[in-house]
Image (tube, rainbow, N blue to C red):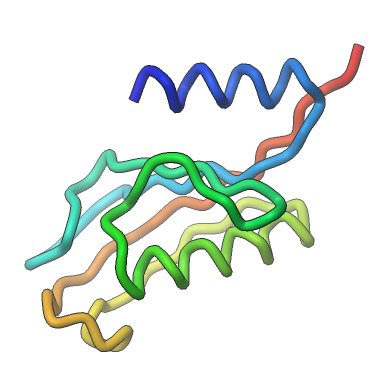
Length: 102
């Protein structure tokens, strides 16, 4: 996690943008538990993980939408709706990050 937080600081210093995805809460069976984090860059590349699979794929796409709108969102989903066998549910915070130049 330390490397992820350092990267967030570096994004601000470089004046770049990204989305920090945080798994805020989980219910039932999920691939990762609350506190898992992942950074999504404008090109769709990631650093960190919130558990992989369809949840991570959808979170990356939502993060790219967040970057376009430049507004953070809270996203709640049931993994069964994403056709994931774990079948739990989770809430993610997709936080838009925009560094300042100068």
